[in-house]
Amino acid sequence: MVSSDRALFRAAALSLPLIFLGSHSALSQDAKSSDNQWIITLGGSVEYGPSYEGSKHLSFSGMPSFDFRRFGGAPEYSAPDDNIDYGLLDIGGVEIGSVVGLRGGRSAFDESELQGLHSIQWNLDAGVFAQYWPIEDRLRVRAEMRQALWGGDGLLADLYLDWFQPLGDRWLLSAGPRLSLADSTYMRNNFGVSATDAASNGRVDAFGASGGVKSIGFTAAATYTLSPAWSVQVYDKYSRLVGDAADSPITSKIGSADQNVIGFALNRSFQIGF
Image 1 (cartoon, rainbow, N blue to C red):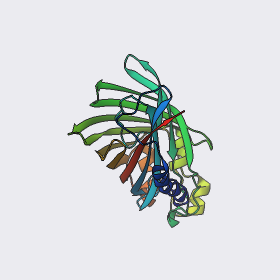
Image 2 (tube, helix red, strand yellow):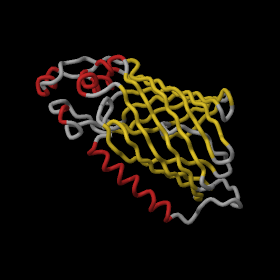
Image 3 (cartoon, helix red, strand yellow):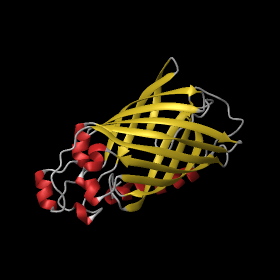
Image 4 (cartoon, rainbow, N blue to C red):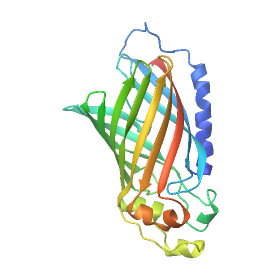
């Protein structure tokens, strides 16, 4: 997430405690189930990682999170890099639904070496997800496909495999590999260098990026439940850019193919009715 966007999301994340403190409908053990009752989970995380995709420089950023489910339904395990989703169908145990996510940007404000290269604006994306539990509440296979909502930023597809391991009543550990693919539009926008960009920058050569596998990685997390309403989580998200994403001079000459994000999240759940 670029520094100009980071302030926006830091402000959103810092506003979450006010929402937490202002809620009067906290979870209770004796609350009665109702069709119009929902459990809302709001969270805020602080991350330390690359300033933009492919950067070698690290910085802090803030990110809000959101989840909801019907009251009475068991909370479903999730990974820290899952995007916001809502299940619509269940076909033979395969859950299918809608998903939305956030894409960070990039500009010369992040690094002076980017001077002359085209900027990338932050973006929202939306699409579909599908997931299946070969082993219930333990092993999960998930896929997301998301298209940028504006700016022609292209299509992303992410594949997840996660193992979830509860330890006692309060701890939950999760870990698993990742594979990310992108179309040619996304790759050209994020890793391509036009002749004009190269001439203006003076540090990198022109480069044409094609679609394909963008990165491989691994995500691990530990979640501790403080109470039915509160939980904390620490996590690490590592990815290695590959193919044209790694060969791009933006990565190979200015940045780094190794991308690692360390995060800490605080989550608050409460019950509301409509």
